[in-house]
Length: 276
Image 1 (cartoon, rainbow, N blue to C red):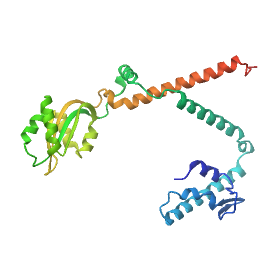
Image 2 (image 1 turned 120 degrees about the vertical axis):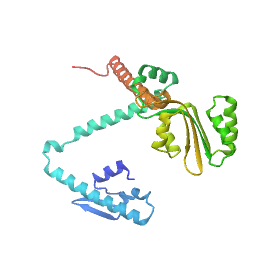
Image 3 (image 1 turned 45 degrees about the vertical axis):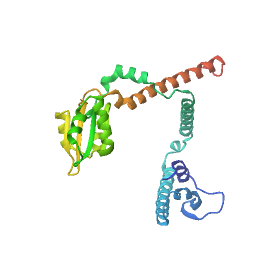
Image 4 (image 1 turned 45 degrees about the horizontal axis):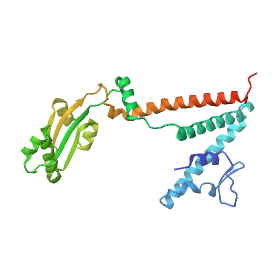
C-alpha cells in the first residue's frame, strides 16, 4: 500500500532528494527520483512485484504532473491563488486534530450498561430486525453416536440435571454443543455455523425443535427456545454496538459544543478578542 500523504507530496513536487539518486522520470522541469519512492517496496514479496509497483507509480506520477501543468497554464489567475483555500484547510485540519486529541484525553468513551438500557427503552422501536433472531440449544452428533434417544430427551428438556447429562455426554460423543439459551443470535450466524440453508430456515419457522440429517455422517438436534421475526424490535444484545455508537456520537457533539463555549467565554473574559 502506498503512503497517501507521501504520495500526494511527491506528486505535487519535484520530489528532489537531499542526496544523489537515480532519476526515474521527468515532466517538464520536475523529476521523480528512486529514493523518493523506496517506501512503496517494503510490502513487495518479489522483484517482479517491486517492478510492477514502480511502473504503476511512475505512470501515475507522470499523469498527475501533466494534469497539474495544464491546470497551471490554463486556469484563470484568480483560481490559481489557492492560499486562502489552503489556509482554510489547514485551520480545519488543526481544529479537527485538537478536538480529537481532547476527546481521546478527556471524554469518557465508554457507554455504561444503564445508558444502553435507558436508550433502548426509549428508542427500541427504531431498531428492527432484518432477519430472524433466536435463542437455542444445538447438539451436533455423529450419525452413529450411542444413546441418541437419551440425547433427544436431554436437549428438549428444561431440567438442569438433564442439561448437565447432555454436557457430560457431549464432551465425549458430540461433534459440538452450542448453548445460546440465554443469548440472542442472528439466524444467519447459525446457518453459517452449520453450513445450512433455506431448508433449515423453513423448519425453524414452523417448529421449535428440529432434527436435521446434515449428511450421512452428522445429525443436528436444535431446540429453539425463543425467536423473533424480521420487522420485530431487535433484542438489545444485538444492537448494543449501534446504540453505543449513537450515544458516543451525541456525547462527542456535546463535548465539542461545551469546549467551543468554554474557549469563547474564557477568551472574552480575558479580552483576547474584540468585535467592531
